[in-house]
Image (spheres, rainbow, N blue to C red):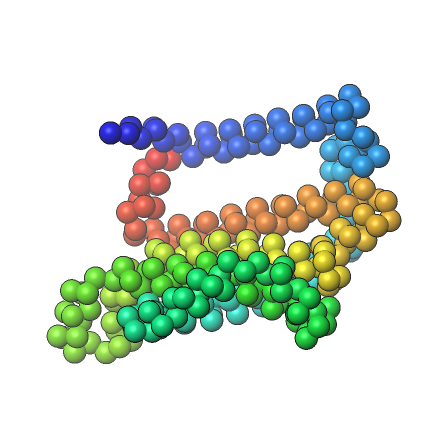
Length: 266
């Protein structure tokens, strides 16, 4: 029988994470200073951070972040709405689940970037293409999680609700969602990061306005410190979004055993 590793307190995890980040930054800085990395294309990380600090005082960075977040909000919202509704319908109907399973398994592995030529041909290189690609990619984690959540609903609980002639909305609120939400919430968190990745990818590849386009323009102009500053900003934005969704997930599922177990390990 495999033994579980003991949990470390949350603040220790935070300290270890910060120490690991500082160590990686120090290795990059020393590698550039020592000449292990060419300084022309790999500027010192300290210089990149100074460039980022300078950008934070102007409008260029915030304008790019705003363009990226605009696409992210629309695409994530569409993905969540479409995927949750479809997942509830498919997961609650065995015939519909059997009829759509092959289609889902065929479409789900297709990378969104493989659709770029077709999407650009149909929608052009603007915001619409970015939103479509990000929505397509972000829908699958939510859809699959919702279907699994619906399949986990206890049939006995549903039969009990029917025997008491509970209204469909009451059954959804009292029986279905408590079983499905612990699956849906992590799916939403994964989809939020996926949507951001595809928004930036679309900006990089097709030139839609945003952080990705700013990275490409800086790279094409040989302004590598600026390029890395935008890359760091993109990473920080992704971390921030993930932290927000982790906090929301913990609050939403504070009644769930998994969250109570995590709370006890703090």
